[in-house]
Image (cartoon, rainbow, N blue to C red; front, top):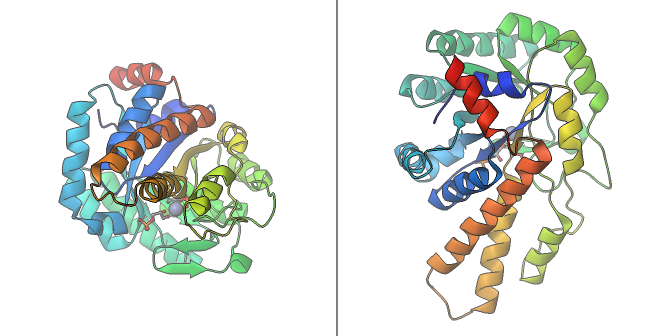
Length: 318
Ligand code: G3H
Ligand code: 13P
Ligand code: ZN
């Protein structure tokens, strides 16, 4: 059942986080639904601009609709990840999405507010909620590259002005993470003090954590053992920090890179061990099972595992 992102946030806020997973194809979608059903977890499917253009946005929509028939127990929202203004409007008008993210974080504050406000007005008129970003993550977001050194954490004072004037429903805040596999040099922690300060000034506002992959060392090692050349110092977010962050208002946790690592490990190992193989279905099937396991594990770490029934009860009350 597709529900609104706001419905999921209302149930989870301050208690646990909803995993938001980027989806590009049928195999990921199968693995995601299977994993969430195994864990009995609500979830958010998110589609980036790149994902919508990979095959065709209608293909992705059809795959998700099919998954809904195959897994009638699933409860989830569909979200546009890192949208520009036009893509937001396309998704709002499509009638398929639960929420959109407008990412104008690379623009100056007042411009970011103005763009976000326009998207909020159009989205709210159609019952969708809007995630907006303030501050800059390090790493690479679609076309925009931000140097690690220039990554700037969200300023809580600015967040108040931004959220109040833009009317956004949730805030993607820069709290020390970045996209991709190379987040930190050495062991680093989330900036809990920033999360806390934002929550104090904006109580009740769901905070979104981007760049939340944990980049498991053993996954990187297996990929490299099977011919990959990932930098072994690749490092991500400590999964044991998801839940403490959730208690402080981080209600949506975005995970993409870790799933790509699962895909890479499965396929590299398969073709290393079977160099004469050329049928893509055997590794595809293994990937679906491994991705499902990975999703079930993330749901445990996020605290969303086992929450399906309480979410079902809450959304059916209305
Ligand atoms: O934050 C970006 C997500 O990982 C999506 O990546 O734009 O390559 O689809 P993508
Ligand atoms: P990761 O690259 O850490 O998986 O982050 C994904 C993300 O933030 C998608 O918006
Ligand atoms: Zn992101």
